[in-house]
Amino acid sequence: MIHFDQVSKRYDGGFEALSSVSFHIEPGEFVFLTGHSGAGKSTLLKLVTATEKPSSGQVRVDGQQLKSLNRREIAFYRRKLGIVHQDHQLLMNHSVYDNVAQPLFISGEHPGDVKRRVHAALDKVGLLNKEKFRPIQLSGGEQQRVGIARAVVKKPDVILADEPTGNLDPALSRDIMNLFAQFNDIGTTVLIASHDLGLIARLNYRVLSLKQGQMISSPFGTNGGTYG
Amino acid sequence: MAKKRPASNRRRNRAPTFDAKGWARHHWLCCKDSALSLLKSPISSALTWLVIAIALLLPTLFYISLQALNSQADTWQEGGQITLYLTFDTEESSGRQLAQELTARAEILRTEYISQEQAWASFNQTLSLESNLELAENPLPASIVAIPVQQSQADLEALLLMLRDLPEVNDIQIDLAWIDRLNRLLDLARSMVLLLSLILSVAVLLIVGNTIRLSIESRKAEVQIIKLLGATDAYVRRPFLYLGLWFGLLGGIAAWVMLTAISVSFQQRLDGFLGTYGLDAPAIWLNATELSLLLLTSVIVSLAGARIALWRHLKDTDPS
Ligand SMILES: Nc1ncnc2c1ncn2[C@@H]1O[C@H](COP(=O)(O)OP(=O)(O)O)[C@@H](O)[C@H]1O
Ligand SMILES: [Mg+2]
Image 1 (cartoon, rainbow over the protein chains, first blue to last red):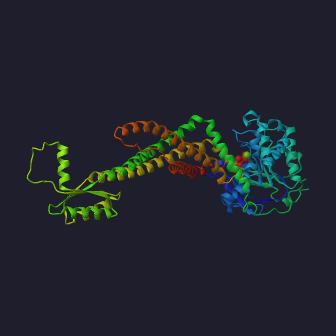
Image 2 (cartoon, each protein chain N blue to C red; image 1 turned 90 degrees about the vertical axis):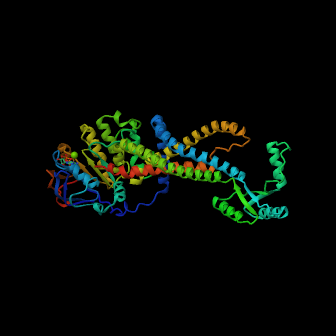
Image 3 (cartoon, rainbow over the protein chains, first blue to last red; image 1 turned 180 degrees about the vertical axis):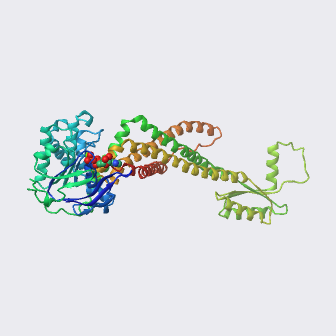
């Protein structure tokens, strides 16, 4: 599903955040991406969402060479992804409901469907009672969960989450991981960047580790050891 | 175990089936939301559409005055007359025949033959001369007064050349020079209105462009986020284009309202003023076609302004 082939990313200014990273993730796999702060986890996810372009190497997702897509094709490509951002990226002037509904608005879903699906997603993250709130009226953890609800509202093919449990207490973290696992059960590919090693250890999924921009373990599904 | 799912359609994001209903829904949503956003900040949005209105009002006012003048110029031109003074050896009968021949021409509306005696009588009457002034001979020539039909300046001049060449005609007196001058003045005014309209259209373009640019700036974060969620450029542009459309429409309507207010107050004064001369004042209104043209221009120019601003500034909002 996600193929990295000798991918390097050098930011303007010359800093190389990723160096010759290669790995692939099978459709329907659940994978953790770990590494210290600054190791390049967010950069790697941004390459998958086509927010950043690799300096060299190739990124292929669902059989598509990302660098061959034009702007319009990138937009449609992103609709297949459910993205949870490290910094939430919520619309601050809109209600929780509107935030979660955005992906459905963008793909022109019927308003009746929108309502049903937004409520289902908010229910899953336990925020059904706060649909009319603005993000500013929510705690960091609650904002995080709004972002998660938005990522899963469309039943995406791929879920990409950058530190999705960064602001959550252990019990909530577990709930959110279970939520991702539920999607994984119905075939969604999941890639989660996290430095919460305790959480990762408890869940028995394949782990990709980055260290200073280099992949140091389990680059391929075949030698990834155990995954549940 | 990881569950494998059948390979999904690779071309899905390349060839999306066009969802007309969703598209129409989004248009409606943007249309509504941008109107609401204008209502939510009435003062700042009013500033923009008032400036647009004033920029539109100026050339429209000129245009209207010009139209009024034009309609009058037509009646004035009818007042233009050509007097043909006939030679003294032209018999009255041939003079009358010439008058008839001239009337038959398409360029001439009507003619009137004035014999030497009539000329003398009216001369005396006008000056109220006592009959003690006795001249042996009547010094006044017979003449034909010809009223030309409305026609272009060039046609009129051709007509004059022809009349001058007539053997019976000794001299011609024309009352047309001022019409010529008026026509030239009106032509000049017309090109000024055109120029003014162009300049002020550019002003409207810049005003709307700048307003939309500010709106893009203030919603930059929002735009970045919805792009990450898969919004196309067209989707992102839509609310801003509707904003431009509303500005154009509101500005156009406001211009029309101001124009009407000005017209109403002027019409009374104009009626009173021209009435003392026994003249009918022209109507200073925009007709339905002109009003639609005003609104259409306003909307199109505003949309263009919005589109240019989007073209310049939307690239800055790519997510990073
Ligand atoms: N837009 C950017 N411009 C320049 N350097 C960047 C940018 N984004 C990230 N970096 C650098 O790249 C490195 C990796 O960052 P990141 O991918 O965010 O790491 P992580 O998510 O693992 O903490 C960091 O040293 C960071 O300073
Ligand atoms: Mg990060």
